Length: 238
Image 1 (cartoon, rainbow, N blue to C red):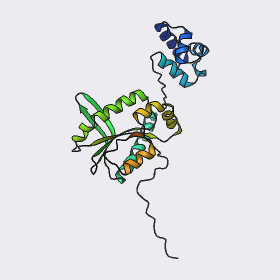
Image 2 (tube, helix red, strand yellow):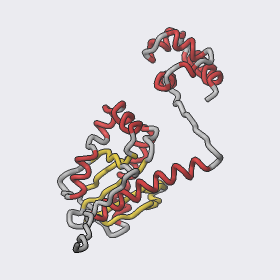
Image 3 (cartoon, rainbow, N blue to C red):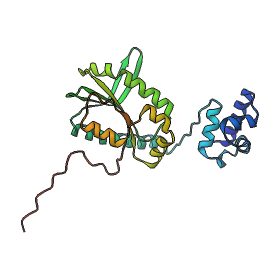
């Protein structure tokens, strides 16, 4: 990130609001010296969360872009996403769900794709899953996810599924960074996705239409074990 350009942008947005440095510091709940440092192009000496707070206070959004070997990073990230999808699909099928992956839709001008759409025929529960290997920009993700859940019933009916209830699950890679991100935005997740891994897995293994679950499921792909029980081979006679 070009910290000189970032500092100039912060100053320009501050001037646009007619604020002094003291005003920005007060609104962002940081010290004036921090604002001075950032505007002077020394943002690399300031924690990333503080930079994000300054940007949000000014009505802007902080985007950090990591590039590596051209498109190689995109392929690497896609591999992580695919591994999570494979792991979740294995669990769901073992628990008796009918599963569809990358379900595209175009309804009244709204287009998109649902990562995993699953159907439990016995209870007529529809499951809409968003898969992210890394915790994304939360506001944009929640808006997109809500739209997919809202349209999920129509997408399901086109497949002959007529749900009694819809369950909303965000699957995240089980990393410390993702867990910290969820914890640091506890209030937002508490409203949008209050349930966590244990409750989600317990429900998915034995769903009921009366329980309207909404939560986050942390899935590890480092040691993916199928939900199916392992069958031990009998030992050969001595």
